[in-house]
Length: 453
Image 1 (cartoon, rainbow, N blue to C red):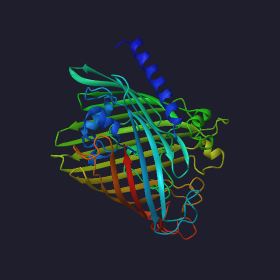
Image 2: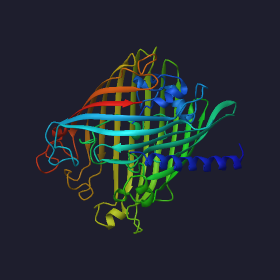
Image 3: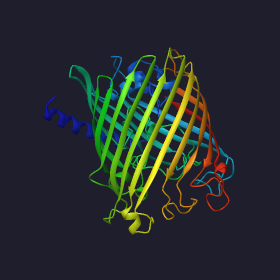
Image 4: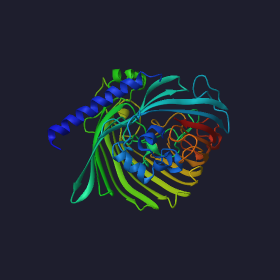
């Protein structure tokens, strides 16, 4: 493949992304999509642990690395899917204020989101996963996750190698192993509860949908994966066109932004594992009219193990640890922080078991810790500390994702019950907000119905 051909492919991928984003943003406007199953002729369980996303099997990992282009060779496949999530949320104690307009301080029944996907093969070597979502809580539509890929298979040192490009809008959304924050457990959660605390690293959703990135990757000998890319911020005008809202603009991403990923992957048929490192290094200028910026250096390690056996009993373990170094020049200059330097660390560990690709149970542990800053972590935090920790328990039922099931390959659904317990929230176990609220008061029962078709 010569340089001229490569340049044409990059331009074509970029043009396709803009066209697809425009199409979906104009629609009435997490993730396993049946359009992939229809394209490949496989059931959802072929790509996803427990027959539902986003945990990927080895086949699912290779399908994504291959640019979403693998197919059964039969034509007439339309790369469109849709998704709905409805839920009931109850916290241990009523919240002090409504978490959003048109909801209550507790016991909320909601239609969380409705999404439309352009997901599948566009050409022989180009595929896409693009999502537009109607937010049932905020009552607005916007572009969601987007990843357009070009993939070409060749040989390097006598070994099969996939070379690819990804145009995407969220650092980590393009990662094929789904152990980074964007795809991590919990795979769905309440939009009107407390999440994993109010402090998060930048790579954990800090730039999602507000940037456009281009990265190049290589997957050598079905074993070594390497990726390097960069990001630029969308203009406020473009964000508004995509339904994101100018008011929530995160600012201008610096020109030296780098995203990188290196991983070792082994598919041993009855079991599989991957272990890797990743990072995001960037500066962020919150006020586009002012030259001040803050610097973020995120470095993470992650690993995943799957026992697949005969696929009747499937067990997985996933973990990640992210360490973020912050240099807060702009925040310090504008009284947004009291310290120039700071750190924020995130740890996640979860284990799951699925029986007959139908019944599942998952237990997860999450810990966020960082250096104290009484200004940056002021209202709603105890002692200027961002520390939050707890456990998540989930049980779920996925009746349609297997071969010869009623809905395959046109529809799938997961019903689940999830319970989040906090030992610490925003810096303390007790009275973290100064108004008598304890971490355990935020304990959340979340019942959900999550369907795709």
